[in-house]
Length: 264
Image 1 (cartoon, rainbow, N blue to C red):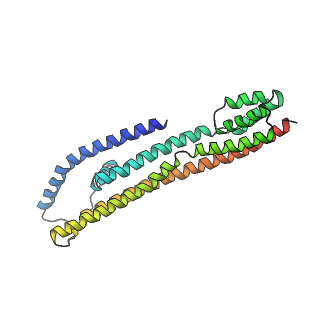
Image 2 (cartoon, rainbow, N blue to C red; image 1 turned 135 degrees about the horizontal axis):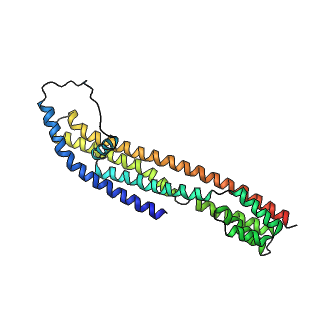
Image 3 (spheres, rainbow, N blue to C red; image 1 turned 180 degrees about the horizontal axis):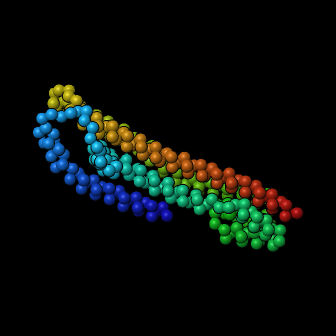
């Protein structure tokens, strides 16, 4: 599943890069034509409001180009990879979130009527982290190691399953941290471009500074937006993991109580 999402992420990045090259080639003549038309206008009303019919994806594409392809592509890559990992993790956690009470009822029925062997086979053939934890505990009882060994095994294997649930979160956290830093780096480079333009011209003019400042602001906003989006997914995943872990602990306690009850 994760490999599929990573493959789709790479395909998406390549598609966006191709669109950027195409749009950049088309926008240069259009911008020159607009500049000539504006120069030929004798009277321009700065307060005149005109309708903005540009689609949102065209506006985003324009901002992407104006922000600089290098850093905006890196910021976009952080978003694509982070979303791919987050969506894959959400799907994995949704599959792992089973009806544990129903499983406990079946185990209790097996312990009551057919013994530990049948309960062990039931858990072994049931997917999910809770079923795997139960399998380890019932295995110890089946081998005659006693309730204490089974309880210890349930606790230890519960920690292993919790580590599996948290696997991959560090990558999402990495992209949350990198995206704003890439945006800030673009900001610094934009300011450097602005000061270079002032140095070459030998004069401080708003027109000279505006280009570099615009690049600086766009890259900063892009990095922050990516970080906010990934942070929302990160917190949602953490909340799902906490819910599953609490359910695992409650179910493990119920299993140990059942083993004590039916071992007498």
